[in-house]
Image 1 (tube, protein in one colour):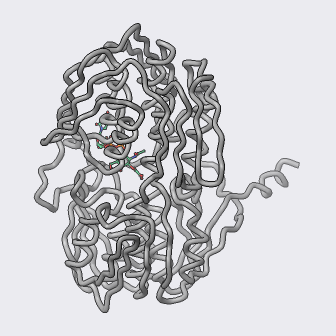
Image 2 (cartoon, protein in one colour; image 1 turned 30 degrees about the vertical axis):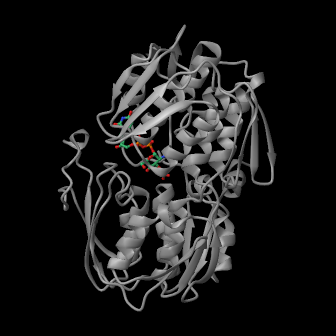
Length: 451
Ligand code: EPU
């Protein structure tokens, strides 16, 4: 019977029971936002490349499936992924990958180099703003690609890509990576001005250099890339994920405990450490680990920015932490125009967070957000007692903030929509369990579909 079938529909949920201070060690692996780009770079070579210290996350599975769909052979061995690009024989990333993550757009340059044409489905990723691809399209067009945007995705053709002078209106991580992945095999010199310098972008540039690319990073966000005729395979051990590292340090601080993060070096966390220490956190930093604890934390004002500023992906854990600081804290988001969708659920848990569509910070509001009515700032009144409840994850980073809040709350929190978290966190349940948290993955009845 149909009704029986309907009641059988379930969805994954994480159930969190707070236990007090979280203490212990977490080892982070390579970052979600670097691993996938390295796998794409492997498409450009004439021999296999191996990327190790890969996280066990959905985005790696999705990217591997896309590479296999265009004909690459991929092998996995523990944390290493080896991509053999020699068998690449298709220009089309199938439509079934539409909306899954931001990676297909980065495959356009490599596919054009390898097969002269490309189709990629519309890019996806978290719903944290309109996330257009105009910078990618403009850059690829300047380098000689003919691009056609259709209902389903992006079609491109190029007989020979050539170097160009490209100026990004904003230092976009993805667009910088698109340019790097395309310019390395293009004919002649590409000068990229206004490029992103996030550690994950630099890590990709170094990997490409290891493959034989000629890339220079000059002051003032300028990259100079001289195209070469061919690239060979390379190996790389990914550096630790700074988003996870920060988030677990906050897990210790928000519960009054102490977490030691291994696998992510201090230089990736400079602004995180200086911001937290300004609030009163204490640190022990070694060559291989960072631990944080605090007797008490004072409120502060933070604005997100491009590197080396306070990164947007640290924003939601920090707002969760603000709920437990005594006084008024301010967060101003300048990278994405819609990154506070997690706030209502934190308020449902007892937080006192007010949203504002005026910039509460010093960074000029981005021209591309003018006219947007979504909030760009919040004021958080702490310390608010949090209580467990049922919450639904809106996006990957917002979802992690729920787990942090749940760990600091009274009572049980049930978190659904956890597929967002599975896409980007390496074994989070195991990591939280190692810190002492009572957290379980269960199946719960799925909510009825929306009209
Ligand atoms: N933008 C445009 N046009 C474009 C490209 C970007 O207007 O063609 C705008 C975006 O809308 C945004 C800003 O530029 O307002 C910055 O976007 P960027 O291109 O830098 O972001 P991304 O490459 O799509 C990556 C990470 C994000 C991270 C940002 C910023 C990946 C897969 N994603 O996104 O990570 O927040 O850089 O550092 O690398 C996450 O992991 O949760 C996440 C969202």
